[in-house]
Length: 424
Image (cartoon, rainbow, N blue to C red; front, side):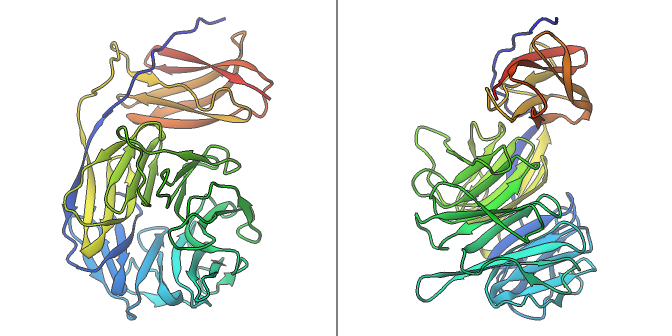
């Protein structure tokens, strides 16, 4: 049997990076609605009046691209540096196969406002939307394609809800969020989940916090949603694929943040959430938060991160901010000459899966094993080279009986071990 190394819980700040938001020059005055990058260099932004901006140098320069029709554009999705789609009001849906030099309109078969679009490859994608009707009802739409948008098919009852945000993990598994109404309110919000490419949708339970606006998944089970909630903060988190959603309270001081959230970005256990005025950042999967300063008082509409070092926020009057990560020393933690920090798993105890988080202060080969109570190895979660920074992995325990287990992190000869309890 191995001995258990007791590790003190320490607050981990500024590992590898110091952060700041810098205002970039967009060259336009239109309100910007969505931003998407395929890597740290190539990205696009869409906005009102048919605005499309493109950069190939990480935002140092932005070039306007031309769409023939002057529709207000709301969202975009690219699968590589050449192939992408944008959507907007009145069912507007456009496709490019040359990086945006030319855009072709596709028939969405709807006149409803399209609020989001997501493609997992050049052929398979979805678009969603909705609008409030004159009698204070709702009309929603989810459409899908398997041929790159040459044909689109409706996939959901139009009276079920209105849809604002979407994310697909692969060709089969996806989530759509919105509300029973699309106004700021306390009516039921809506989360739909599909495991068959949108042929059928199952509604997942959430608190009544008003319309939900953005959804992102880190893996098949770990996901985040943001939306409207003037009372408790509209952030939700799941670690079981949406079977259960937990409300996350964003607090940077004694007073709870009660803003209406619009932007969401997730990289490992780093989470960025923006309201129309502020940007909040968590480095520990939402346990603690800090507010990040950004130049200018313009309002924010969306966020996107390509990696831990490169992120962008956009907003009104052509505003673009770039998040810059710079190498710096490790602060806020006493390593005692250690190279890593292993955090407590969550949840603990657990009955299906649990998330294990760790941080390393330099690039290194990492091994993360799980042992039973008598010291026998039952699983290897990680055995590979990892980059400097914070990491989060899910441990799937469905093949194990109830009991006490230990997870052990090994890096450069340093071993850290912690205890967890599996309850069936």
